[in-house]
Image (cartoon, rainbow, N blue to C red; front, side, top):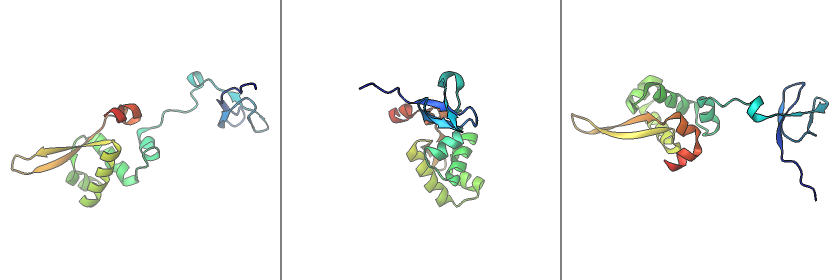
Amino acid sequence: MARADPPALVRCPACDALAVGSADVACCDGAMEPLDADVDAPVAEPTLDALLETVFGISGTELELCLCVVEDGDATVAELAERVGVDRSVVARHLADLVEIGVVERERRLLRQGGHVYVYAPVPEATVRDPEVRIES
């Protein structure tokens, strides 16, 4: 039994549609052309926003909180709640989810006047994008 060629990334020359298949895949009444992914790069690397929403399935509020932490650096629940205009308990719950999926880190800091506060900091973007780095952490 002959081995079939492995599937390749192909593009329709008429409409630029992309597919995974072989040279016999058709679109717009014609054969699709194989692409060299290293040369043609038809798909750009996703933005951090798209990655967080699509891969991690985070909500709009979680995305807004995550981006606030990324832009501003360390922040407390109270600071983030004030910035996004959402109740502190809701912010705390969303931040717990972001910590669990590994896109935000939580650190306990002692206050000079006594007590403590949790501060949330961004995880480096390279760590979020690379699943092997996230697993090793």
